[in-house]
Image 1 (cartoon, rainbow, N blue to C red):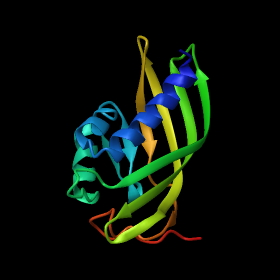
Image 2: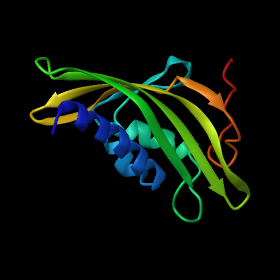
Image 3: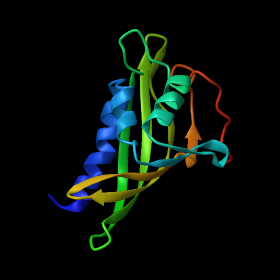
Image 4: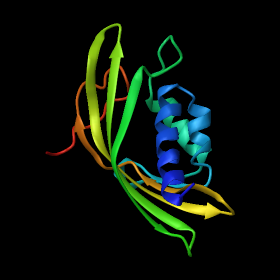
Length: 150
């Protein structure tokens, strides 16, 4: 499998696990990563991300956030010799709940970097500050989110 396929699979695995409500498993993807959050705050590792998601993401009675993360427009740059890679992608999050009709609730960009350890690629960094569009996130997030400038 090519490095690009490994990277894309990691990004899609993140979406799959998040949509399944498997926060511990999605957090493990970031065990060795630095993640930039709102206000430029950087946290390190899966435990820190798990705490963030538990504080912010509403898990419904079905055990999931009732979301579908759609990740597109991935541009992957690999430096095979250095064992590093970067990927820029777009995301759109759709949600439907008993009180919220199916709709896009937010959209933005992920800027990620990756490191290869042996033959395994893993997240090295993620920038969560590229939150471009916001809709009704009342059924997704537990805390209010400021509306980004347009």
